[in-house]
Amino acid sequence: METVVRYTPLCGVGEDSPLCSLLEIDDYTILLDCGWDDSFDVALLDPVLKVLPRIDAVLLSHPSPAHLGSLPYLVGRCGLAAPVFSTKPTRRMGEMFMFEACLAHQAVSDFAAYDLDDVDAGFRLHPRWTELRYSQKHLLLPPAAPAGAAGGGQGPAGGGIAITPLPAGRYPGGAVWRLTLLGSGQEVVYAVDFNHRKERLLNETTFTTALAALQPALLIGDAVNGLAPPAPPRHKRDEEFLDAITATVEGEGNVLIPTDAAGRVLELALLLDEHFARARCVIAATPVVLSYTIKTVLEFARTQLEYLGSEMVQAFSHKRTIPFTFRKLAVITRLEDLGAIPGPKVVLATLPSLDCGPARQLLVDWAAAPRNTIIFTERANPGTLAHAL
Image (cartoon, rainbow, N blue to C red; front, side, top):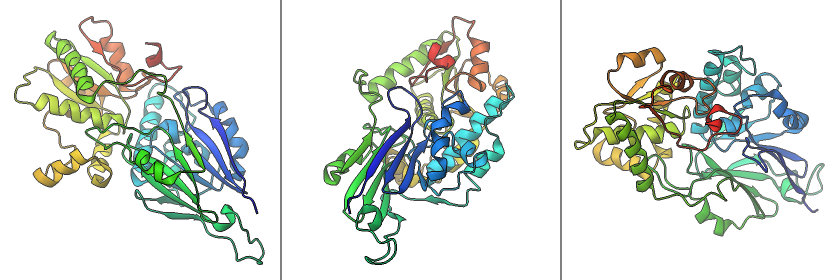
């Protein structure tokens, strides 16, 4: 019997918006990511809510709100009870992303899209969440009953479905999902927001190497940077970034770098700490990372060496350097603590949208002084203050 595989984008197609789509293999329905944007507008989830009763499983690729932002709402408010699959860092870092966003919005408004209890229900207390390691195969759907038995089938869904996460290279624990249709041996690959470049924190994705061997029947990907000009080498980008910081602090100015809660912030924290700790780098300024959840994020990240890049692993193996033990970088969770730090400051602060959070308040406090600088390290989401700037 021929197996029907149907892919339906629910959002994230044709525009820079959160990712959410439906993969149907015969009568088995998989939700691929469940992102939400910075507005947390419930109306944007209408396409998901219409198919919610049919969802049999949820696969999460990355821990950012653009990939799992609606999970607390769907579980806590809408009763989504399907099993969820991800790596351990995606689950834990995703929880921190959603805690950070909730706390930031609640501090400035009557935020009601979801609350901290919904985050607990969607992550820490979720009874049907399975954490997988990279390259660990898991039987998502057992094979059907033998031929002749009730419900027996000959196609891929009847033969069962196995899932395997592969390193995506953008976030710790970020995954490219490989789905194997056991009845036919065909492959379906879900690969979004993967990174071709090696960084301090993470290695590049292994997906592109594996793709030639996989030869999937269906490849689901994205091309968000397809029309962007080629990025310069890492050392060139770092040099330009650090030169802008140095020029500002030498002029007695402060630098604001809006960033996320548990992803890009780690790479930037490593870069700033390394730069300010160099013996030849004598700068009368203090690098700071400021977010509500940063101490919890760092504590967890230190235990996830298997998901970090070779540079981090080698530093630990050869020098016994504990990951994210900073020499110069100050780690604070309250904006009030920033006042106790003298001199110019270089601050990594949430949220990247600048719609709320410590970064928004620092923008208000510092924007009027020409000597201060704001540096955006990633493209901002449409509809946000960061995008307008």
